[in-house]
Length: 80
Image (cartoon, rainbow, N blue to C red; front, side):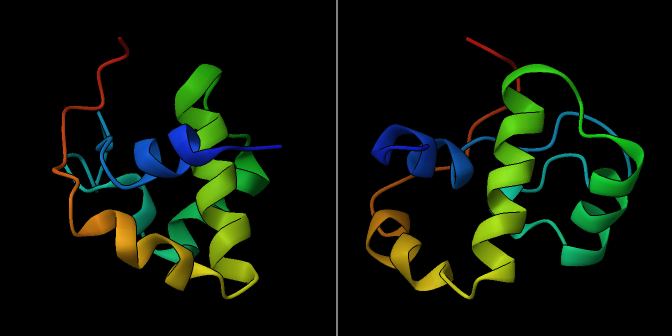
């Protein structure tokens, strides 16, 4: 299960490595998230956020993030 904090992290945490380094997790391409699902998501919060982003995208629920995006700024993918 997830809560509002998870949704805020999806639109504020950026990818810390790879081809899409610096891109907000929720804005990663679906194909990239699907590839990670097949290969195995990274351990910890990053992997959990990537899996959540994919589920939201697959289920067409991106609109739930729109109100949150207006007041949230991206931040480094470094864990707190």
